[in-house]
Amino acid sequence: MRGVPSSSKRQRPLAQYVALAVLFIMAVAYQVLYTKHQFPAWFIHPKAADWPFLVGVSNDLSIDYLRPEAKAADLRAGETLVAVNGKPVTV
Image (cartoon, rainbow, N blue to C red; front, side):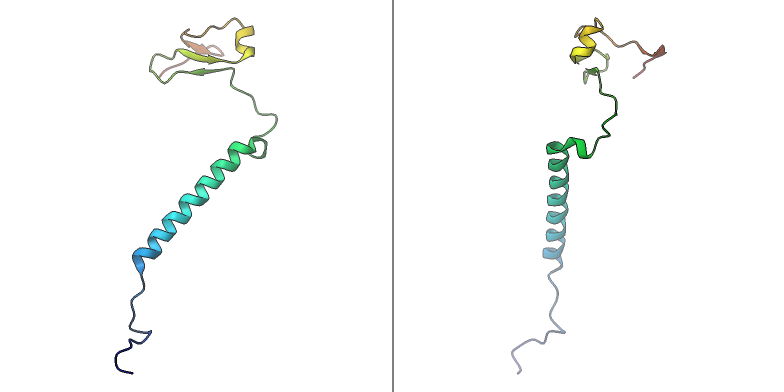
C-alpha cells in the first residue's frame, strides 16, 4: 500500500520516552523518600547515636532545637556551639 508508512521508516517518539524516563525516576525517588520517612528503622542502624540538638541555619552556630537529653545536660536554645568533645567547631 502506497499511503501507509512502513514500520521501518517511522520515527520513534524520543521526547516522549525521555519525559517518561524522567517521570519514572522522579516517582522512584519519591517512593524511596516516602518509605524512608514512614519506616526509618529500615534505613537507620538501631544503635546509631541520636543528635542531642540541632544547629540553626545561620552561620553563627546557634543551637535551635534541643532534645530532652540536651536539656538535661543544661543546654539552652540560643546558645552558641563552640566546641564538640574539646575540638573547636568552625563554619
